[in-house]
Image (tube, rainbow, N blue to C red; front, side):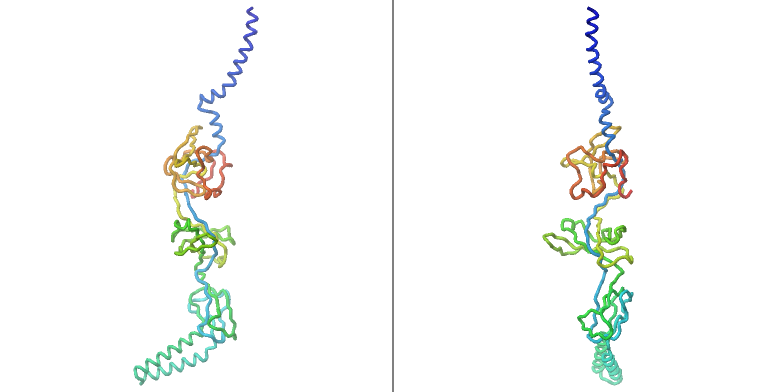
Length: 353
């Protein structure tokens, strides 16, 4: 009877051992605080909280234009006697660019000047004044036969040749002031309240995309435009530096900095989750995760300023899968690189650091 009971007990013992083996991982995980959770955390990309910069910008596209580009015309009609410049010449303010046949005007001026000199000797005061006015009018008429540069710049086109007859309606020379260049862009009415004169801007030319040129908002129009049902406001941005590559007409993309926070605590925008008015991050401490409410400040398409809730050196989940909803919105989505390919603790640095 005793042998039979021993053989009956063996299967029961083996079954009990199997159950214990199956439960060991779960029990061990509970005892050490969740090894399974720790293993899951280890596979997620994390970010070490640090200081950086957050910059909000508004982008718009326009065309490069010089500060001044004018077509110059003679003040009187006549036959062109001389053209003293050609396209590409640099000229100074007041320099003569072209001259009409002005023999008649020159003769009239000499006669009026002689009459004035004679009247000054023995003429009555009224006669002297009359001759002086005659001389001034003759001088003005003579001056109308000269085409002068109203400002320093570069000749971009010459439209006339010696011997041609021109009128006051015909352009003779085109002059460009290349001391300053501008870009006029159309900013959406929903964004214009954030744009102010003096704000910095970054300008990138389609013809030279590898270089970013600094600019500044110089003027915000007082009048809005409507086209195709869209209301925009013209904004003029001036290049802070001028280089020989700039050409009128080039397409330019302008990024106007409308807000910025420097040397602040930042985390990636994808680390923030929203649940109604509450924003949270998932912080990692000793392999364990905890949900931490945070107060956020400025944000752009990549980074969020943390005003309260985190300290430099804290480690957070970079792609936060917990919470009510991502802080990333359609206006910011896609603006920055994804974080899925970064290993634990290897997130890229915040901008400006």
